[in-house]
Length: 91
Image (tube, rainbow, N blue to C red):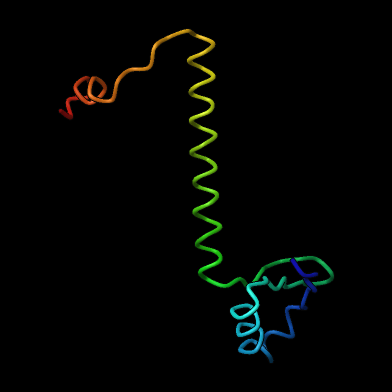
C-alpha cells in the first residue's frame, strides 16, 4: 500500500473530479483534513462495499467463535436448526 497524503477540505472543491478519478483508478483512499485533523475520506465505492462485507463477515466469525466458546464453557449441546425452527413455530 502506498503512502496516503491527506488533502485539505478546501482543495477538493476545486479538484473533486480529479481526486475521484485518482481514487477509482489507484484504489487508494484520499483522506480529507481540516486544521490538520482527518475529517473524512474519499474511497472507491466498490472498495467500500468490499470493506463493509469483510467487516460483516468478521463480526459473524467472532459471534460464531463466542457461541462455540459458550458451548464449551456450559457444556450444553447446540440445538439443531430444524428443532430451533420448530420451537419458534417456523417449521
